[in-house]
Image (cartoon, rainbow, N blue to C red; front, side, top):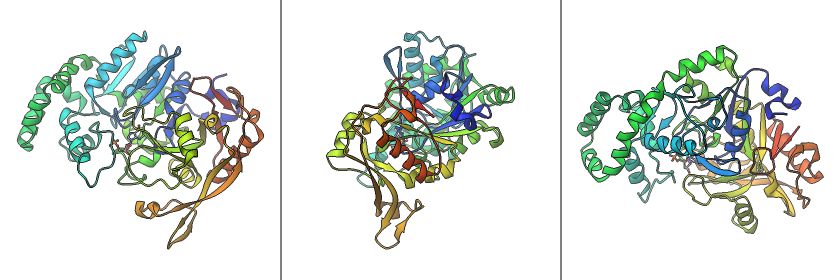
Length: 434
Ligand code: IMP
């Protein structure tokens, strides 16, 4: 039986539009879940972020990492869309379309809708991101994919929309404007010649796919189609509700899906968050449960915690139920998928942070808004016995070893939301259900 149709998940599927988000700092393993839940969807929409994301999928045993394309493209007959809130690196998108073709996926404009409203990442934006990150102060640890500068230009109303990018006259007009606005722009055009050539070449390839994606998505929703709205990054990297300034530049939370598409919130049936049984973070920023010991190292090694986009080692720590409860509240999560539980197997004991201790504010049971306060917090843990029995790859959550069941129950108790599914391995079928 398919994941969305599990009896225990009835509450989550009472309408046909579901939002799936990362419930931590990204890299929760969303790709696999989106891919398997997408099997039931007729339309899969990416609603924010750009090629800073990396979704790793295994298709017929072969690994593919998608940065820009929605994972739905691997399902026959399904439509994939990038909505207005996404930023697109055109050359990267073309590379992925070609890679998908190697996997036997033929993309046709009827199956891939690219929003004309989405903003375009150019070599100029990548240059700006690199410049900012190379300063000794104020580096965020970005992926250097030009994400922040592209969203900045969008907000300052000097960005390039995809619909204008694929139109030669508008694209040239934009390039001319940028030359006039920024003295350095001409130098970057010259120095990054190859990147600009690939950028220009992508316009012709992408043009047939650019459309009023949002209108089409609304029509699909109105027609009762099963729609999956796929978030990238994680809720704690949200520009407003994340650990600012150590965040990405878009609205990663569930509400971002509505804004990106121009879809009324009343159409959203369920919001599901994906969390790992522990936490990872790449880049700078507070991380109260971060581990610097052997346990952290072994989790990182066993969980292969290296960024799918940049290859950077991820910081690793215990599951933070304070942060996860905050994410449940902010995003109205109907439930949580607890991924990579198999990585915890073999530990003598496992911990969950249930509060923070701050040097002057005392014990905090909610996530502080101030990132500097969070930076000074120490976690207050509950410690539970670990388990050494292998976790079954498939079946029911009830089939977990007793100690692992206790862990799941404790997580549910502290986050105030049900654990709907548990991830037990990298493949689509590696999952336990209620
Ligand atoms: P940016 O999105 O490249 O601007 O990076 C801003 C922050 O978000 C940095 O801490 C990145 O490491 C983090 N980030 C961006 N994309 C991802 C992702 O897909 N997974 C995890 N972290 C990410």
